[in-house]
Length: 262
Image 1 (cartoon, one colour):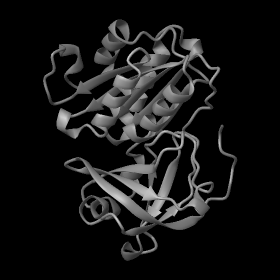
Image 2: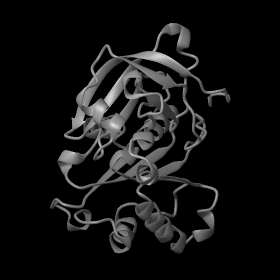
Image 3: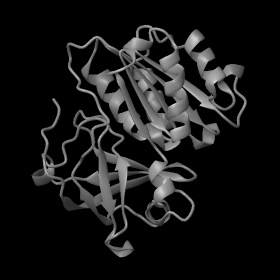
Image 4: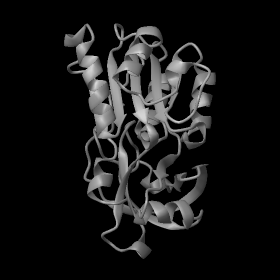
């Protein structure tokens, strides 16, 4: 069930673990005490605002929760960016046992889930844009046994794929209901179509041959603005175009990075 609206406030949470995902990204899991569990109950796709006392009161950053909203741990993914104050701290200095100020979950990049649903969800994500998508698709697959999901995930190389093991686990747990398509911009794959930049032509070929759009109920787009605009343009131009409106969820990952270093 979706969580009710509540006023977001900061609480001090102990870091349970910091797990290296790639050379420049980590997953941070928080230890939420019993008395705060209801405060930190979240909807799939929501995010947390996080700050570290040693970095100053004005250094707070938003990171999407990457765990399914089915009772799992409170976990976020952080990718280090050049000169990023908090992301650099998280990737290099943060350790299990440290304490961070964490705001209760917020955000609307989500969709209501219902065990009676029989929907098809498709997501297109790039880089760290996987974090809310992983939460959403993991939740849908667990809660809606009649629904299916597909993910087109864009990265430079295999070594830069965040949450690779978690995605493979989803594929193994739901082999008939979850389709995973990796597109690598700087690495050759066995399928030529899946190597190179996800431009309009390449996406069109993927939709023509691997992931048809006719039966998609909801789309989730999460990545750099140029990518989400490009993908949306392809979807709008493909029939049945009138079905796209009202079932598309877009987050432009990277817009905040251009405005403020995280």
